[in-house]
Image (cartoon, rainbow, N blue to C red; front, side, top):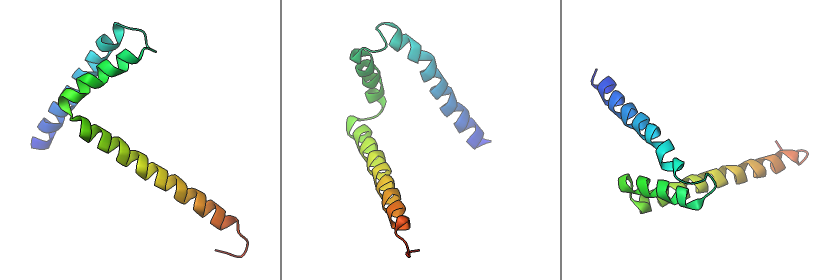
Amino acid sequence: MIVQLILQVIFGLILKGFDNLPTWVENSSFYDMTTLFRFLDKAFVIFPVDLFFTCIASITFWLSLQFVWAVVEWVYNKVPGIN
């Protein structure tokens, strides 16, 4: 019951954010970089900039590591006689 209340609050805030999204994008063209900067400016009110870039860097690092490992494994399996 408590978990349901917490999830309702969280999903309510997320949906409220999605409701506001078109009004942020409406004022300029879709391909304009100022729209992206305005959107990030709204996000940086909630999350600090260093946390945002740390998360992006961490996600990029782990995805790159996973890709490199997949390539190494693919090459490793192509060599005859190695299992």
